[in-house]
Image (cartoon, rainbow, N blue to C red):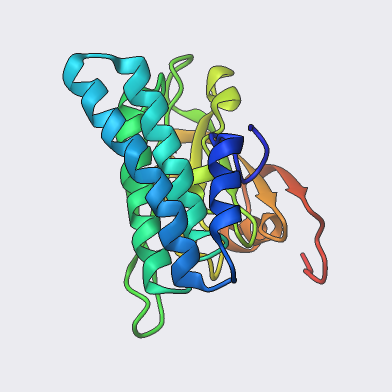
Length: 220
């Protein structure tokens, strides 16, 4: 369908789920979309066993899509949390067939009690150029997580990319010393109200800032 949030979805699959739902119950929503994801997960695994890389990639991405919809718009129930974990699993299995691998990085985080001490990001490096690369940091909106921020066009133009979650969305941002060392310039794309947080967090050294969705009540 190629329309957010249905990037890898098939119209008939989504129609089937929506017709089956009779309420906005979170667990039923998660279960309905997860049930559509499972057959594609099985097809992807079977394709891997036969060496069909293209089919494996396509079916893992479709399974990722439906687990992603199962957790949509956020992980506010047990079923949605499990669906989110499955969506991550499917994306990383699909990424084995990507031209630009995804590296899961953990970043130190000075958190409040109970928030943990690290932040997860997805780092991808281009094939053009040499270290240090310009770095594009991308954030989702309120319902957009880092898994949706793959940014292949930037990688094809020689930019490294780092996808992270915004404040209050699954994980949070932190200063990353490796990025300072390996990347020559910083640019941020923030969807919704996430862009300005880059300036607050990094303080200086941001070359460009793109905000899509408006600043709302945010202050730089």
